[in-house]
Image (cartoon, rainbow, N blue to C red; front, side, top):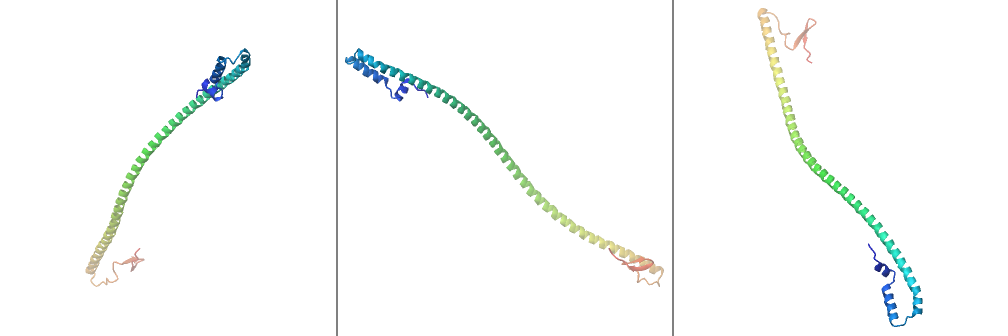
Length: 190
């Protein structure tokens, strides 16, 4: 803020123009004589002193104005730097929000795939359970078929023995017996 001399004088309560006008009016009316002019010289000195004080104060105000302008300029530079940082942070936040949206989309896709895989896993587990049941049934059937074939073969072998030795007692010979230490004993199944 620039302070001119008139404003500075007015602020100090000193209106030089009014004093001059009064002095001129008195001089024209003849009231002021040479002696009075001598008496006005202290007034002129007072005026000069006050004018010097006003000029010093004006210089002080101008220096203050320059300092304040420098401070204002520094603050404006600081605000500009802060605004640049804020803009940079806003851009970073925007990029992070975009990345967040991409991540959310990826997570949603992964969740869908996970659900799909869980469904497929459930189907595979059910199929494995069914295959295990079918395997057990097939194993039981094959075991029965093998036992039946073994029993039939054993029966055929006994029939051949009876054919060769018709009077021989074949009742101790069964599929569930075995020979241990030269004796026919019941087979112990594991």
